[in-house]
Length: 379
Ligand SMILES: Cc1cc2nc3c(=O)[nH]c(=O)nc-3n(C[C@H](O)[C@H](O)[C@H](O)COP(=O)(O)OP(=O)(O)OC[C@H]3O[C@@H](n4cnc5c(N)ncnc54)[C@H](O)[C@@H]3O)c2cc1C
Image 1 (tube, rainbow, N blue to C red):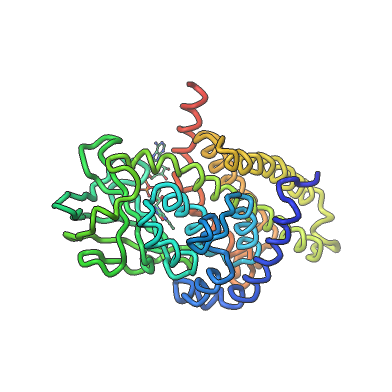
Image 2: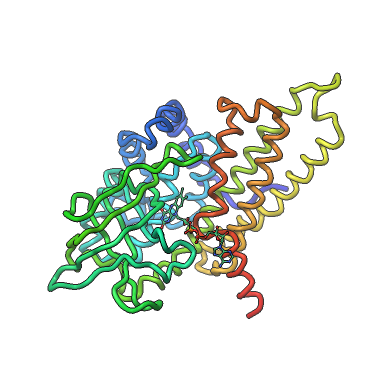
């Protein structure tokens, strides 16, 4: 079946973006994995080429294009290239709605031009050592003193946390319930704000993940993002897009892994014939191919629903858990088809497999996603 999600414009954009990452990212992947982060020159180049914040208006250096299919194209190409960085999904898929929909005009003028130039790496700080799935339990706080907020507390597991120029963090500003939290943007260099060292992860090594620390950190109240006291609601409004971004990456990764697996079983011989001649191998390929096709269609529909402002929290949660479960199953099966070679670092399937494990945990653990879908189904 022909995939109908994309138009010629999307495909032309795909070509341009792929050429860009093949030229500027792919040759450096190993170097960035060792460094624990992608380099700044690459991020600036991405900005110069219009790949960051293109949803923002031209007055901020964007293109004013609000069509998540472009984000999906980028995710698919990042996955297929083996780059496996979270830069684009973090900046374009996750942070953009906070700045586009919630930031004031003055804030936009302060941050968006640098964002689109690739000079403002951003991070989103929700999780804390004692509050991950249960976000309502966050303890990081801000108290108001005149025209300033004074932040105290800690965030953990924050993507781009070690390198961010701007962290948008959820802090407690009232009692423990949905209305007691607020998003605050904290610029790197603000006294009392410290970015931790990159944490040692089992995968996604070219992407830094770190703790953030706030110790009597003073920021102007002009750094509040969105309505004060309504932070939890803002997070909930933006989570479906984040979860869809993860689902798109998951399907793209499963699709790419299957292609790698197909190449391998056509070439690798055992018992006098290519592995692809074994019926049990072909049945596995059939299952993976069909599962990816079916789920891919659902995720494509979710992308269009997001574009139309109709994607529900439950639909996005369903896409996230189902796609990441499928991704894990496919990657593990394909790695098995590679035999011992699949366990070797120089084989892309090995890196894909270890990079994929977090997909079932972040953006909301899959058990939490199922609970969310279950509640919607029960009504
Ligand atoms: C590489 C990486 C990048 C990340 N990036 C970010 C980021 O940029 N910003 C950010 O804010 N956070 C980020 N996170 C944090 C991530 O979102 C959390 O780890 C995740 O939400 C789970 O929270 P937790 O780790 O505290 O696990 P817990 O909440 O302690 O949950 C542990 C496990 O318990 C089970 N569980 C929990 N709740 C339920 C439930 N209701 N029903 C059934 N089972 C349940 C699940 O199996 C879950 O995996 C990142 C994490 C990693 C590892």
